[in-house]
Image (cartoon, one colour):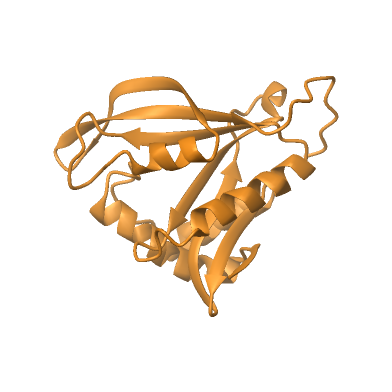
Length: 179
């Protein structure tokens, strides 16, 4: 397996992976699959400031993880939101752990110390959403820090959203971050 930085040219395959989650799950609260052009723009925007990594096996992209702005204000420059998606047939192979470990390493190098994951959370598990993402993040060292009730509506039902946090650096002195 190989982990590398995503490129704009990878957007087509990344969108195929993401499309499954939009159409078949409540993992993404997005209800319409973005166009390829929109997805390319999202990848380019992220790469302008944060790492956007993908994992390949035998030359086939199996998943991706990236960081994004947590909040726009400068005081939050040491924080970011993280996101991960794996091909629906690529789960249980260690790709998620490998991607997140590399992402954390890259984020630490640019001065990020707080990671936040915004996760769709079922009121009751169903065919569209389980608590697998929450459990994955717990195994990766994240702690649940917040919950919003019935804030996402998809597939004619309500879903909650949780925030999970991981501190990747104990250094809390004055920060010098050049982002």
